[in-house]
Length: 99
Image (tube, rainbow, N blue to C red; front, side, top):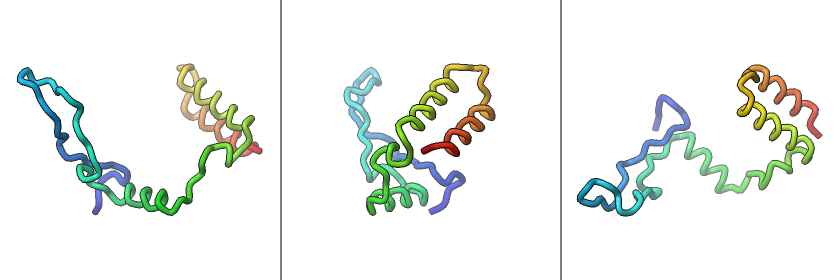
């Protein structure tokens, strides 16, 4: 199965009860059968099935390094003057110095 974007799923039209005025009386039902899995999603599910995943980010770096990354994310989304390029450089610096 191929697609233009390697990590995009297509969904079948959701099912659900619709009232006479056109509003749903219950949320749409999506199940595994309603998704068309592309190659990227299949690969991700294979990785999860093998259990080769980290349980939490602190397995990769110290709490201090994680705090620095989280602080950078908060600053990036809260400070319109921080460019994506500047944030990326700071992220690389944090990861390079991570313990």
